[in-house]
Image (tube, rainbow, N blue to C red; front, side, top):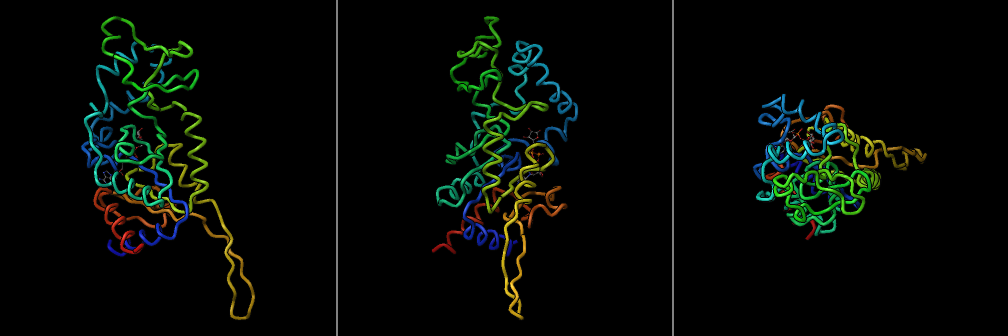
Length: 280
Ligand code: APR
């Protein structure tokens, strides 16, 4: 493990544009359960996952009931009280060092922003906002007293710009990824020469496509043979490093160059320490 941590530190130092992709696994050490790990929400309650596939349709057909169900049974509890863990802070440090350029997260918990990362793309949205599907505007949920709207029979909240019903800024199954986030995520993935993939089972699309897009990007390398011939080879432009409690399809399909198996909250800070030592 130590060698891989040193290797990841060297790869980060040598990178010119590193991007991190994260999933629920980076937040479990903050007390938020993941979905498909051994004690994940879907692992423990497959019926809850089946219900989750109906949520988007519920919003489209009955936004009032969508909000009543959402307020009655918040899936991840009160995220406002949850704090980042050393894994989040490590990624924030890498951004401060100018190494990590963007975090693209599937998590809606806002913990990367709370830890200090400024450049975060919320690929599956963010629990602290409401979003209008019609005009695309997002609003801080602090501006809405949803319980009061519920008591007064005034759900769903309406968009102040176009008066359409607002939904949570959370991407549900079968819901399209918001265009602005999808577009920039693809741009960042095509720019990066190093990708850290932290705490995701990498089974949910289109997010799981992002590492594959990075892997397909090729650059030409030139080498001289002993007989003086020049060899031009096309190699992957991006080094992909997985940090996860278990191997994933990215590991088995060799999309990732290597997996550092273990807890993100333990591994990421060690990588940052190594980066600091080798950057002196
Ligand atoms: N450190 C490293 N890996 C961890 C840790 C940890 N502390 N805790 C859990 N893991 C691993 C799990 O073993 C699992 O492989 O993180 C991964 C989490 O996978 P999922 O639970 O599937 O979460 P994620 O990949 O983010 O799910 C993607 O699915 O249900 C939807 O919208 C939801 O955004 C979510 C999406």
